[in-house]
Amino acid sequence: MSKNKTNITEVDVFEFIDTYVEKEQKISDSLELIKLMTHWSGHEPKMWGPTIIGFGSYHYKYASGHEGDAPMLGFSPRKAQFSLYVYSKTQRSDELLKKLGKFKMGKACIYIKKLSDIDISILEEICKETLAYLDEHHVCGACKH
Picture 1 (cartoon, rainbow, N blue to C red):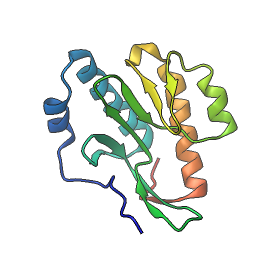
Picture 2 (cartoon, helix red, strand yellow):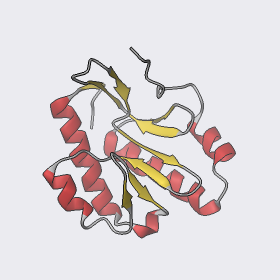
Picture 3 (cartoon, rainbow, N blue to C red):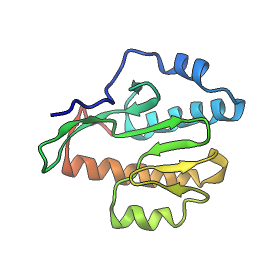
């Protein structure tokens, strides 16, 4: 069985932003996302792997037997765009996506260039929908949102 590559590390989140994120707008947006996701999730930010800032955790197990832990909410300030790990495939989330603003959808993440391209109140609703979904379908570590 393969080992999950994305685990919590001891790297300081703010040190990561200082050393990895180059553009002022992306630094500002990263700090705002940390503030928002900390508030919405009730969890402090932690580094997951080398580039993902995550909030809280949940345990998953697939039918194949593969299992692991992942952040309940998270994002990565990649060079080209932000990867937002905040989406769960629910009918409500799909409806909310229609109102989010300017983004691209990956298999399980939302890509945005900057926070001003999206409606933050809709992002909050998507995050809360995901937190509720995870609470209902997975074992969450220290769920307190």
